[in-house]
Image (cartoon, rainbow, N blue to C red):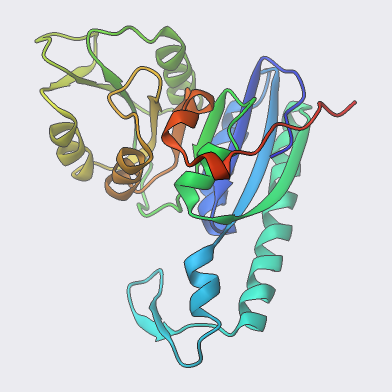
Length: 254
C-alpha cells in the first residue's frame, strides 16, 4: 500500500467489497470534519473466491446465507470493477468533506491479513464489515487492563460523540475495576460472548496493547461484532505476519 501523506491521523480502510467498505465510510464521513486526516482505501479480492470461480458449477454461500452458483471469472471481474469504482468514488467524497488527501489500491488475499500487511505508515486500519442492524448501535473500545490507552479512548469518545452513540469500554484482565462505562471481563472469550449479544456500530482496539494481538483474534472479533473494526497499533504487528507478505512502504507522494 502506498505510504500516506503526512497528517495528524492517517486512516486506511480495508474491505472485501464496497458493501463492506460503505459502512466504515459513512462513519468516517461523520467524523472527518475539522480533523487533519488522510485516507486510504484498499479493496481486497478474496483469493479463495477467485480460485472457486475458476471451477464450473461450484456453489457458494451468499451474503444472505443461501446457496448459489459461484459467478464465472468474467462475472466476478465485472462485480469487482464496479465495487472498486464505487469504493473509490465514496472515498473521494468523504475525503473531500475533510479536505483530506486520499489514495486507493487493490490487493488479493485474505481480508484481515492483507489489511495488516498494508498497515505500515497508517495510524488506524479500519477492517470493513457491512451493516447488519437496522438501528444504530454502540461504540465499543476493547482494551486490556490495567494498561491505559489514552489515544484509543480519546478517539472512541470522539467517534461516539460524532455518531450520537453510547461508548462502552470492555476491559479484559484480572483487575476487578476499570474506567467509567467499563464492563470488566476475566478473559477475551468473555468479552467476545458479550459482544456477540450486542448491537454495535464499531469496535476499537489496539494490537500493541491487547487483549487482541493476533490476526486470528482479530478475525474472531470481526465475526462476533459484525461491524467495522478500528485497529490501532497495526503497523507494529509485522511479527505476526508471514515474511513473504511484507510490502515495503512507497515514498510519500508530493
